[in-house]
Structure formats: structure tokens, C-alpha cells
Length: 208
Image (cartoon, rainbow, N blue to C red; front, side, top):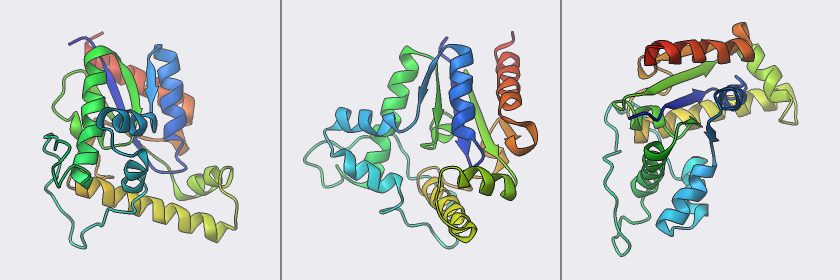
């Protein structure tokens, strides 16, 4: 297995997506984010809007007490099954897409709980990008219009959305460092040094 996959989970406003794109460009490999949703829709024939609803948290409800068990089992329900458009099947089709891609190429991917899907896969580096609250607010204000209060509410809502999504499909805590191989504070390091750190860790992992 020569293909390398770097998964990046990130807090909104931490610049994790930017770091992922910079890393992919430096390594000369593909970068995937929301394209996976369209690819899973094409693969399954299920309306892409249904994937979007789960992605945005419209269908995902988190447990008040947490859930250590993932619903991800990897099995696909076929057309005609009552579970064909279930949350589980929508997630599993995305997992199938990322697995199929990993058989053909190396890539960087953001989100979608791929750190869990690939937790036992060799040649996979699982990264979490976080940042201090003020840094996140400042970064988010460059993309989101509204008052500081509006931006802070958005960040809190997005953190909860990601946590609920991760808890449901991967089990456990999205921000738990034990779910990752490398956790980086982009507010302290800056984006370039985050890329440097990931590249260095990748070389160590591959024995280069």
C-alpha cells in the first residue's frame, strides 16, 4: 500500500481547510472536501441534497450523554431497502468513496470523520487543527458577516454540529486528541508551520 492519506479535522476559524490545501499543493497530491458528497451521490444515485442535510446537521441528533459506539459498520444498503436513504447509508457511501480513492491515489481530505474510517489503515496520518477562541473569531469574521455576537454563536453552533456528527458516526468525542496522530494549534504556529509540522510527521511515519 503506497498511497498516503492525510485526514484533517478542524475547528471553524482555525484555518484547517487552508492548511489542508497548502499541504496538498506542497506534496503534489489531491485535496478533497465537499466533493466527496457529490461523488457519493453519483455512486449511490441518492439525491445530493440528502447528503447535504446530514452534513449540515439537519438530520443528526446528538445524545445528551454521549455515545462511544459508532453506527459506522461499512455495509451498504441497496436500492429498495428501507434503509437505503438512512443517515447510516449516506455516511457509508461517503466512506466507500474515500476508501475507493485511497486504493488509487494519495490525498488530503478535510472532515467527514475519515480519521475514524481510516483509524486502522496503514499510511494514514490523522490531524486535528485547533486555535484559540480570539483567533477563530478573527478568522471567521473574514468570512461571516454580522456582529461579534453573531460570529460567536455561529462558532458554538458549528462546534456542536461537528461534535454531534462525530458522535453519531464515529462514536466518542470529535475534539479528543486520542482520535488523532497530530494536534496543532494554528493560532500559535501559523498556517505555514502547521504544514511544515504535518510534512515532518508524515516523513517520520513513513520512515523517510
